[in-house]
Length: 364
Image (spheres, one colour):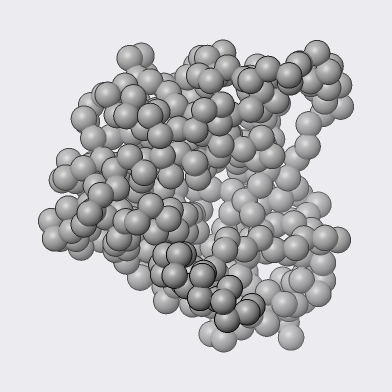
């Protein structure tokens, strides 16, 4: 970089953006990919063939339906959105988080969430010029520290509070009454992020309309449609009408609209896959608990957080990769995640291979 180029960048790019690192995606070439909380199953051939015909008959010379009306109706039905609530769709949940932050940003305003939590809450707050307040979870079980959250809300008056339910990266469900207490005490909007809803029976969707400041966010990524990049926000029209003003036109492309609507018509296929993942999650939880010196945390998601013996996480992560298995290394990401690894639940075959690799490494 020349001195002049460096001067231009330093002058024009916001300091807080220059201080960031771009979101990193690991190279999974040739590896069993268990690092990104994806559904490991592809579509059955008969479903793939029907989908291919649908894509063949879909024209792309016109802009898509800007409101994605047909898909929105299907999503509302599939996700159990209460009558009277509105939907807004995004290019993944990330775009919805960004729409919310853009709409609520302003001098001195902040975003509040818990740490460790979903990294995009912090990053998008920074993108939008908002301060981020992260309240630590309780160290023993990653539960909500309600007193600390209430104190932080009273001090910082956050415009929006994000709570992932279950939480990423810890996998646990928070106490329902603790969530309600935070919703009732929050000065602004509360977004309950239910990205991992397919893997738990708990949800705040049915509570929409009971609280003026509550909205619920979902995605179709974890149910097996990650490649389509589709997220949704459900809540009172009064909130969503405002967020819709900052939504970029035609943000959900026509191929995503027709593909997601088609997939949701065959939700039973994805429900079967989800049931398999939930069963394999229990197998993995039991197997990891048998590894010497390993602490396994409860999970209501499609991944498991575990803590290796002290100082072993980096070596175990590298050893798994050498054995052809890629997971997520969280050691160093947050003080509460010291020595922690986060494998995604894969197919039975992938999980068996991963468990064998863990057993080999733990025996060294």
